Amino acid sequence: MTSKELLEKIVSILDEKKAEDIVAIETAGVTIVADYFVIASATSNPHVKSLADDVEDELAKLGVFASHIEGRATGWILLDFNDVIVHIFLNESREYYNLERLWADAKQVDISALITE
Image 1 (cartoon, helix red, strand yellow):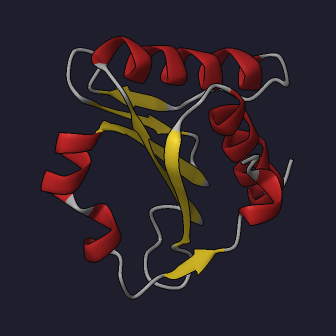
Image 2: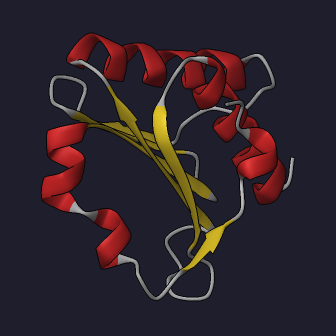
């Protein structure tokens, strides 16, 4: 699975599970950490955990596993799938850390075709 295909699968899972304000950023040109970041918001701590669990479970069915996970007990969970890093936040945490501003030099990916309204 390419990093772009992984990105698209993650965005689709998050959208299906009612994540809010999903953003994908192409970081390949500005860092060696990952090709993409996916940032999404959740409505509560249980929703944050549920979204992270759903992404993990659905990708595991495809033989894709996170190499690192952080933040299980907080309003921010990070799932590192090597080429794609997923950040799932409570709204307050997302506003505080403002990753979109930190990675403003990176190109935002058009994911509108993957998102249902």
